[in-house]
Length: 157
Image (cartoon, rainbow, N blue to C red; front, side, top):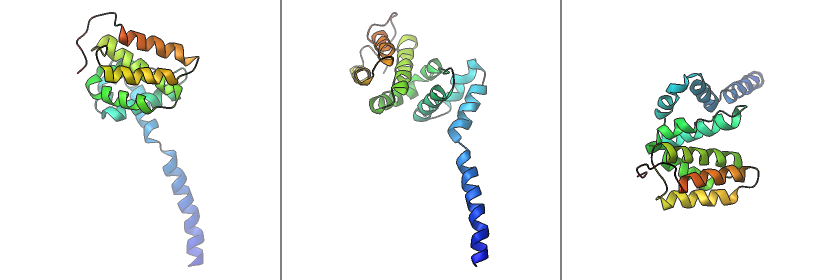
């Protein structure tokens, strides 16, 4: 019995290490990044809104220079807008907060306006107030683009 425990303990440790090394976020991110640029939005659209936001932030934080998929995330705005807004309200990481602001700004400048969405703008304003330099300037510019859109788009609903 003791010999069996001694043999099975190293096997268990190896299994835990191997299982721990497979990162589904990394695998998904790699698949998205290998997808041709014009098809990334479609690939992301197959995921839930929350999963799209998670994947977007994973790629943004773990690629150098950062790969920004804000436009691709914006393509799926009907699914992602609630997830982006929710995540923005509780995000503590400044880099991720700015990435979420860029995604909101992309939605608002390309697909539908959030200028009349007080709920979204309030969350965005609160997020900007939590950010320090050097990220604050970029976040403020994104917020300004949402509050004062360059072109007239239908409101996000």
